[in-house]
Length: 161
Image (tube, rainbow, N blue to C red; front, side):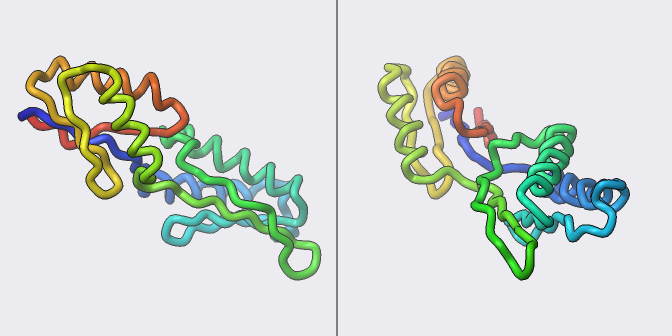
């Protein structure tokens, strides 16, 4: 039976490279000289620090431009709240999404079942496996998922014939 997996996985190597390029640009820009503006990544969390919210938005703009240049969808980032840390410094944490939450997985399976295509969808951990008898049905399911679930950066892998 032909099948494929619907996943939500960013290319973490490209994300790390974008964060490092952002840190380099912050170090060389004149308007950030002498300020605590910085960007750091640990596991799947990107931390932005700065003097004020305005500076955080500037760092965020640099980060998003570096991510888009490296073909990483910005929808992978979950924006956290701005927090005050010692003195007049602020920080903001972005979580990098990895995997499909159960609510989104249920929504994907519901979309596939309501479409009356001859395919089956099954939730497997943080991915949704779609199986069907014909390759054309699977390709139609991919197009349907991309069209109906536009709020998540989904990709398809593990395509088997």
